[in-house]
Amino acid sequence: MKNQLENIRVLDLSHVLAGPVASMILGDLGAEIIHIEPPKGDDSREFGPFIKEKSAYFISVNRNKKSVVIDLKKDEGKKILYDLIKISDILIENFKPGTIKKLGFSYEEVKKIKPDIIYASISGFGNDTLPKYRNKPSYDMVVQAYSGLMSITGTEEGEYVRVGTSIGDIIAGHHCAISILTALYIREKTGIGQYIDISMLDSLIYILENAILRYIVTGEIPRPLGTKHPTITPFQGYKTKDQWIIVPIGNDSLWLKLCKAIERNDLIDNPKFKTNKDRTENRTELNIILEKVFITKTFSEWKEIFEKNNLPYSPINTIDKVVSDPIVKYREMLVELNQPDIGKIKIIGSPFKLSETPGKVRDHAPSLGEHTEEILKNLLNYSEEKIKNLIKKEVIYTYKYKT
Image 1: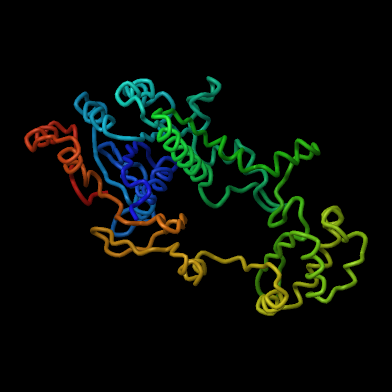
Image 2 (image 1 turned 45 degrees about the vertical axis):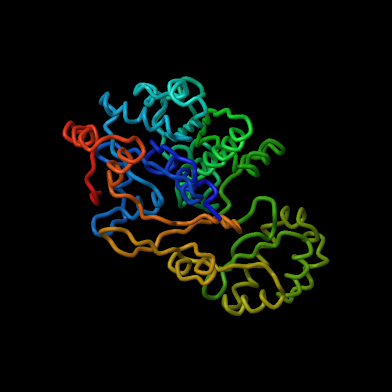
């Protein structure tokens, strides 16, 4: 069966992470991704870690894409982008709001070129927003802090901490891809394209469902809880003799099983711990008891007990353990890529496990300008002479394997 998005062409004018995540998803699902880069390249080509002076960060997020380098500050460069828009389905950009309009490629202008275009913008606070926020510089950590996410991340006794991945960029990229796929479906039915305005702030607000609702309902301002869940108990990590164990007891039936498994039947009929509501209200007292229980055995001993009683649990794995984990290997979440000038490298695989058309890592990440000539010649029918003239004028760049 063909790739599900095989006939869809995406012009990816984005950079670093939020936009590239959106186009990476579409590329994994079979779309043709043409990554338009400036002469200096995508900023993320300068981000580590590096392998043979090449950015592994860039390679991971930009697999399944083609690189075309155009100087969009020059009129002839704008003409090339104009020609590419005419034959494309989707445009993605994550410039600071207003930047792409100054270049002459706002949604209103692009719609004149390709009436059914699906045009997606990602920014920190949205394009349709309050004026003082529209041009506010934004990075992932800015939005983590502004959204309130950082205020509930950390230990109870410690300082606020950043979530250990660029979640604002990544969630916004996923929301952008979902919106694009929805717009494609609607266009298939109606022939009408549309504009998509994704805000990183919106995306993080969207995933703060418990914290925000808790404040709205109770007036309580949520604080960091370490591994604890705010409304389910016990649902956290405990120290064993040698390492931590995560114990997520999500209902009263599991609580009953846990009490029997840890040989504390006396807790079953204790009115302070009878229901989840009771346990949460008396969490401090309960945790004093459970901490003393779990510290008496090693993780391996508790693992055997939890397995025997079919109770949920997990170690807190470090990344080295995740990389070598048999489930991760079986699910093909680490795949080997043959990257020119580097050789074989392992990168993160695709999580999209469709039975007939799964997401795949098919092609290496492009060298800067690797596909400029190919795209201009094969898609735009530019002559060899015209391409050479554009190279001479430094409107386009075609050097390969340079990051």
